Amino acid sequence: MPLPAQLTWLLGCVGSDVVSRMQLSARGSTSPLNNNVIATTIWIGLSLNIHELIRQHRSQNFALHERYLNPQMVRVLKTIGFDRRYVRAAGPYLFDEQGERYLDLLSGFGVFALGRNHPKVISVLQDVLTEGLPNLVQMDVSVLAGMLAQRLLETLPVGLERMFFANSGTEAVEAAIKFSRAATGRAKIVYCENGYHGLTMGSLSANGEEYFRQGFAPFLPGFEQIPFADLAALERALAGNDVAAFIVEPIQGHGVHIPGDDYLPGAAELCRRHGTLFVADEVQTGLGRTGRFWAVEHWNVEPDLLCMAKALSGGFVPVGAVACRKGILEKVFNSMDRAVVHGSTFSKNNLAMAAGLATLEVMREERLVENAAHVGEQLIAELSPLAQEYELVKEVRGRGMMIGLEFAQPKSLSLKASWKMLEAANKGLFCQMITVPLFMRHRILSQVAGHGMHVVKFIPPLTLGPDDRRWIVEAVTDVVADAHRVPGSLWDFGTTLARQAIRMKAGVG
Ligand SMILES: Cc1ncc(COP(=O)(O)O)c(C=O)c1O
Image 1 (tube, protein in one colour):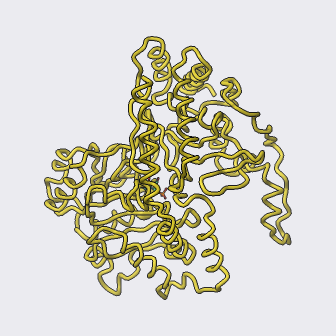
Image 2 (cartoon, rainbow, N blue to C red):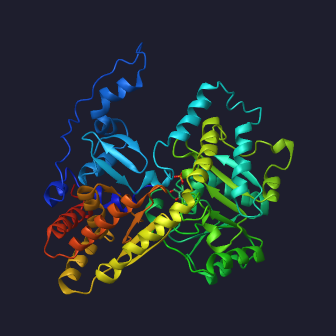
Image 3 (tube, rainbow, N blue to C red):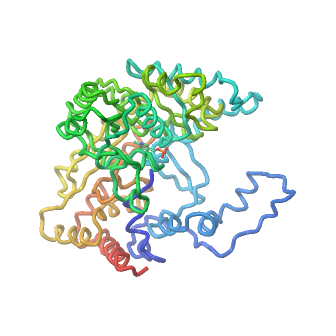
C-alpha cells in the first residue's frame, strides 16, 4: 500500500532542503550520495556471490533506483530525510549502516506481522529449497497448498470451506470480484468511499480514494461507491437485487476507521436479504493484526468471501488468498472444462505455501494474536490521554496493532493560524509534522494513513514488547508536545513544508 499523502506533496519538492532546515535530526545526517556514479558490474561470467554484490553496490541503491526505476520515490525519500541505508533487519527493527536501530511501525505495509526475518520461517524456507521438491508442476496438485488451505480454513469463520490462492492482495480481490460475478450471474459491485482494495484494474475500480484513480480511467463498469458505515446507503444500493458483491474492509486501513458495532452484522444481513455476496477484505486486518485472528470476529460476522494476503507468508514470499463458501467455488469451477478458468502461474508455489504454514505455526506458538490484542490495547490506553491533553490530537483509536492518531484543527489562535496555513498549502500536510520528527528524532518509521487525512497510522509487527511500547509512547508524546509550541522548530519545519507544497501547486519544482 503506497503512502499517498506522503507522496503527493513531496513530489514537487525539488532538491529540497526541507530536512536540513528543520533541524529535527537527533543525530548526523546520512552521508551524501553520489548519484552520478554507478559502478559497472561485469555480469557475464561472474559467479554470482550475492553477499559480495550487495556489499559492493550497497551505496548505490538510490542512484540505481533514480536511473532505472522510479526516481520520484528517491526524491521523496531524500526530501524528507528518510534516505537511510538499511543493512539489517530483525523483528520489529531495522538497522542502518551506522548501526542505528529503527522501530518499524509500518512493517512493510503490514506484511511483517511476525517481525522481520523470523528464524522459523527462514528455516522452513531453507528446508523447502534444499528438499528438491517438485514445484508448480501445474498438471498436478501440490500437497503444501492443500495443507495450508486446511490450516487456514480451521481458523476462519463458519461457512468458509474452500480456499483459492493468488500472489497478492489485489489478486485476491480480483478473484473475489470474478467469483462473485460468476456465482451470482450479476455484474454490479458495491464498495465504500475511502476503501482500499489494491491497484490492479478490478480492485482499482473498487478503490474509494480519488488519489489512486486519477489518470487511470475508464474503470470497470458496474461499480458503485457508497459511504462507509452507512447501512441505509447500502440498503439503497442493494435494493434492485442486482448486485453481485459488497466489498468492505472491516476496519478501513486508510484513516483507521472503525465502524459502529451494528454495521458489519447489518451489512451481512442486508447482503443475504438481497442475494448479494458479502466480501470481507482482510488483506490488512487479517491474521491477528486487530487482536483477533480475523477482524470480522470482533462482530461475529460470517462473510461469503474473505480476502487475505500481506502477513500470510511471514513477509518472505508474495501471496494472497480468498476463502469462500463451497457453493461459490463450485459455480466458478463448475466442470472439468473450466478447471483452470481462473488462476495465476505462480500461485500455490511451494515457498509461499510453506511460509504460510510456518507463519501460522509461529503465530500459534508465540501467541501473537493475544500479544497484538494486549500490547495494542495498552498502547491505545497510554496514547489516548494525549487527546485530552493536547488540542491538536482529536482521537487515538484502533484495534490491536492497527492504531490511528487523528489530528484536528486546534482552537487556540496561534496554533489555529499555523494549522490553517498548512492546510491551505495542502490538506493533510500537518501529519508530516508528526511522521518526519518521529523518524528523525526518535527513529520510528510510521505513515500518514490516507490522502488528505489527518491520521498517522501504526501497523507494527504483532511481536512488540514493553520496551517498544515505551519507545512509541515517549516519542509520540515528545513530538505531539513540540507540535504545540508556536513558534518552534516543528512549526519552522511546517512553514517550509507549506512553502514547498505551494511551489509544487504552482508547478515550480
Ligand atoms: C485492505 C487491502 N486490500 C487490498 C490490498 C492490496 O494488497 P497488495 O498491495 O498486496 O496488492 C491492500 C494493500 O494495502 C489492503 O490494505
